[in-house]
Length: 104
Image (cartoon, rainbow, N blue to C red; front, side, top):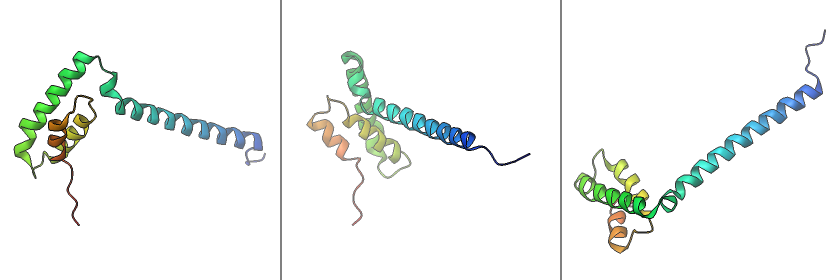
């Protein structure tokens, strides 16, 4: 009896692997796209309430915390806040405070 797999089995295994990889990439892309457009997908009233709550969290919790262990959280909140269509110039100024500064 031969222990070498048949060419058909090898091809089927490769095809199944490629299909699994393509499916995983498609799911990851869909999740990323959904997160990127998340604020726009919300109903206006909910989006506005979330915007206000996030802006207030950033303003109150993060402003005194510069350089602390909250810095990664604050940067993530600022990046999220910048995605909202409601983020006007005062909001953008708040967001800019949490962007990393170049070291060079």
